[in-house]
Image (tube, rainbow, N blue to C red):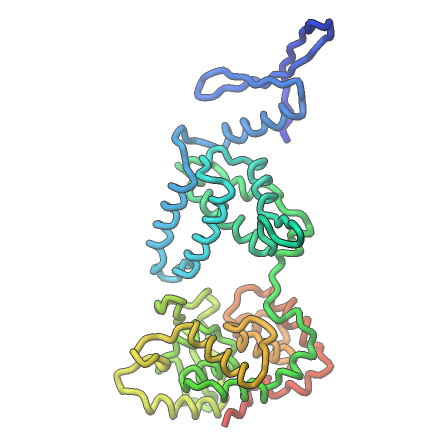
Length: 398
């Protein structure tokens, strides 16, 4: 909070008591103005709002939330197909869901009226309120509240920069979250809060049994790729003939594309997504047999009956049916189950001595997450000898 030299106005009321009011003088568009209050602390807060607006806002034109969101969405969608774009239709749909929550709380607010005080109150409104143990407003998960906050920041940021209405992003200047909030929003890969013992129960034989009970051969092969390489479902769906190098003694799976939820072929999720990973000889043989059944003009390995990429939903349904048949319940997120299962096995086997190599093979740029949630958790496991086969992808699928 800035220090202000407030003016004073003193008078005697009809009861004979002396009253003092404080005044804050400022200029707006060349016009002298002032605000007044008998409460000095209240006046300081109001003066801060005016100061922020005068320092940060460079527009005399209203900036409604709805118009800004539509402009931001249109620009982001236009950039969706740029090389290494961070935008996908899935991402934009998620942002749109956040925007609707923002609108429900804020209405069509003029973004020029948003200051740190407003953002702080917005964060409070995101917090859950319960009545008789039922959620009546807000959002229970801190991680989701942070996503909504971040999307609001992105929308506001559309007007930030040189030659734009705002000099800085008010969502980035304040400290809006408590230490407990920050602890609650800390990213934990699904399943990583389980004890190390879960890996003994969910060993390779169980994984193989689950995959063997999947009806689609294409999906079985994709699951095996994910279980051996920790590739993402989007990366497995994009596998092509040239993705595999079987000529060398060590068969490799090269990742250079991904398929989003709208079946659009794109670059990998991050720059780290471009990578080559060793696969087992057994899987190489199965993939070779499968490739030999494909038409010569079919480049992509895993297409459905109408020649399109498989839906992620179809893959999840196949996994659900297999688990139900075996009376098994997956311990965490279905879509990424095989990716995180294999990564946990890699860590438990002691395959990696540093997080950088581990992150590179995962195609993940978050080295700290890899260090905390995989290496530190599993690498010192007393049971690492039981997982030694996972060091060299020595899997037997046949």
